[in-house]
Length: 191
Image (cartoon, rainbow, N blue to C red):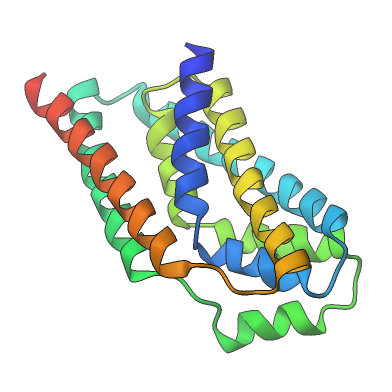
């Protein structure tokens, strides 16, 4: 159960994070700070946000029938597909925060990523996953998946500049969310 929860959460959150606003923030931070402090800050923020998400998911999951959860989760994943297809970008205020923050990179990244993740699709996906999968595997998998995706952005930002093949990433992530959504809907409707 732990391995399954870990792998599913890792995969879903890794894909959800590709092209997400917080991944764009990681790219922006990487152009200004050294990679390791940014990664530490992201890890701290992600661990906290995903712990809260898992707690909410476990509390919801214990009170709702599994078939209903699968239907809602399937619809949520189709919503995530639409959100991913639409794309994310940093607004001027968010980009300015990355540029002018002179505090340590760890504190700056922790605070920025914590705030960026509240209500984000990766937080909602983690809540959804925690309703039907083990809490620890979901928490660890979602945290590691997000940190891995943001580490990729940090590496790209630090070594290759700020250009990503955004369209290809968005299409692939959207397709995977549609696939997850359809599978969950079918499971829920069969129940």
